[in-house]
Length: 74
Image (cartoon, rainbow, N blue to C red; front, side):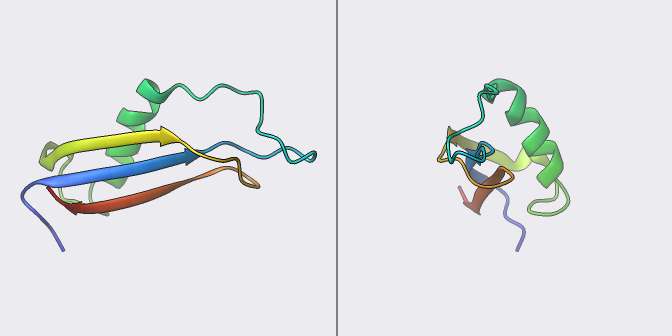
């Protein structure tokens, strides 16, 4: 479904090492915002100009790393 105003809530999950701890690579949130918003354009919303609210946090490490997203009407 395409909304006029979109809210994006995302949690970035760093890679988990073999010992079960988070990778020592530091995630730079401000660099991730643009990449994430552009990557979701055309998939979760028509244009990233529709974004009215963005919440981005770093979560627990997972095997291989990843991202959890929630898209809703703003």
